Image 1: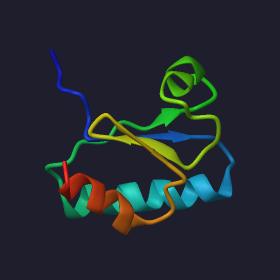
Image 2: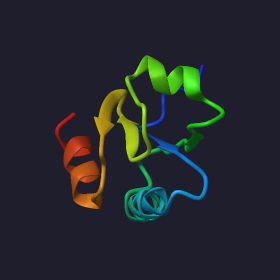
Image 3: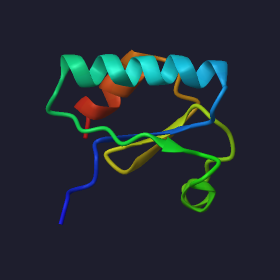
Length: 83
């Protein structure tokens, strides 16, 4: 059984703010390869998104902890560091 990824961003296609989140997550995975990432399309994974209370983009799970309104790489790294 595969362990859960460290970072699971919920992305809405064509969302400009989601593009920034994708860029942050991509940079983190390059800088810190020990963190695993699994990007999910929010529109095709709506049931899982709603399970975590996600109603809009800029949301993700970081080590299974819901983060809403994620706008900075630093916030993601900080959450990873405190888990």
